[in-house]
Image 1 (cartoon, one colour):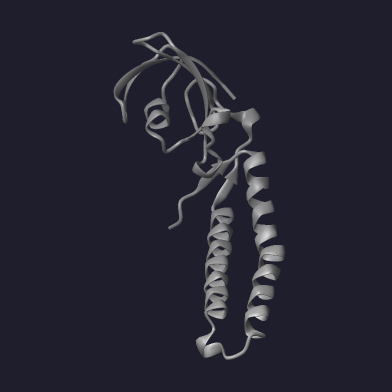
Image 2 (cartoon, rainbow, N blue to C red):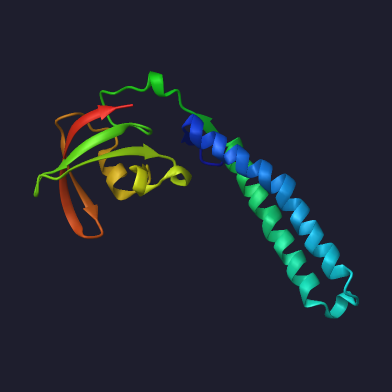
Length: 157
């Protein structure tokens, strides 16, 4: 059974736009490349034609994967999120106990993760260590640099 993934409205719209592009302009571009390669003569020795057909296969595979992702995605109503504990889509302000540095992250689906905007995947080590915790809790999380201890300062949506 496929894994259900939760998205923000913005993230879900981005996936739908990408799928629409792949199905329209993307397919048209591939068809054009195949037609141009076919016009160059003998298909049995035409590397351009083979490459275009292979690109078509990859393209269709990407479409199928995206359709599957969308079929198994759910929109989370951020206004109904429980802010008493850390969940998917929570915005969490944490403090590094060792050096006092504070960070704010939103836990999002893997495909929405973008560290520059403070969005981390719910599957990341930090998010996994925070899920289910409440304000005031301290958690030790194994990260690539070693074990780090974080205190949860605030949870919002």
